[in-house]
Length: 466
Image (cartoon, rainbow, N blue to C red; front, side, top):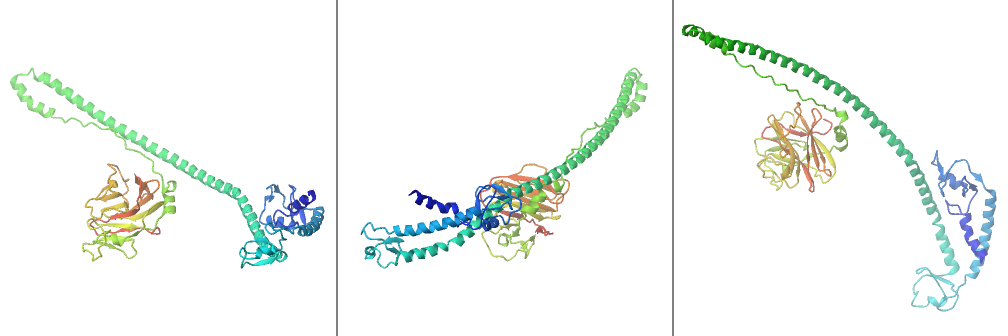
């Protein structure tokens, strides 16, 4: 029994861990594990620096493959012993059927069961394909041999995947180092820019302080001059009180004339507000435009009848003549509004609208159920987040009284929607400055919103290459 057990364990010891077949031209690597020479060479074929053992992952030198001729002879001997054992095993394998106590000499291919001749009688295996044991065993050995190559391929693919994954940490470190250096460079440029901007702002502040001090000094001197004048008038009053009636009346005209001295204005010492404006290359806007630009088009089925949408659906303008268009439930019929496509249910999206010198417009984002019969500009509480221009006034309905724009009036407006963060931000694309950001919670599809106004100047969606 001990010999049989040892022989049963022998295949596991003489098989290659890679191909799972008997070792061919066995070699031993640094960690002591044995492989077919061709198998280990194929496993390491795509590697350059590190050569991990397929069994224990110990890093080895590729060329350190020691031929193990003694193990090869032992493999040959083991094959002979296995062959002898198999013959003896087949001789002992004539088992008896538990039901009929007869030798199991047949095999049912449908049920994959050993049978005795009596088992084949109806009804249990009626109509099944039944073969003699030797024939069935030969057939299934052939079938098993067909599994060898696919399994070897799967193992090779697995080893290749392991090899590829083993390189990933190094690639990750290289990417992290590259990004770290880029960030350090950007921060250094930003520090230099801030230093220059700080010096310029402080210099302007110092110059303004000197100018204000000079004006304050002139104002104080003017007050001192008028103080002397009033002191003189006060002395004259004291002198005139003791004059005779005739002398008093002769000089009173001159006194009244000299006393009509206007009080000097008080100088207000106010400083101009200084601030820092980051250039585009140090802001997030450049990356937002490059990464999240969306292809927006106008939806003609929502356009007010007095609006003309261009053929490429990128431009819209007002016309006094009402268009003959189909009546759709989603078409705006009161305000000259058109909505954009696509709908946004998630993600981050950026688009730009060219407004030029158009005197009246409203641009933003709205919910898909926005009423088409509103007579006033919708606000955030009605499901529309927008900024607008009317003449020289810019504001954001629902945002309160806020200074929206810099000194540069925009010819283009950038809109950035971050659905998950609940933010809609507007940018002045003329000087690349931030205008305003709405914050809300979105749980319905959103669409681009355009109010065109009563003038013929167009609104145009930028294609990104304009």
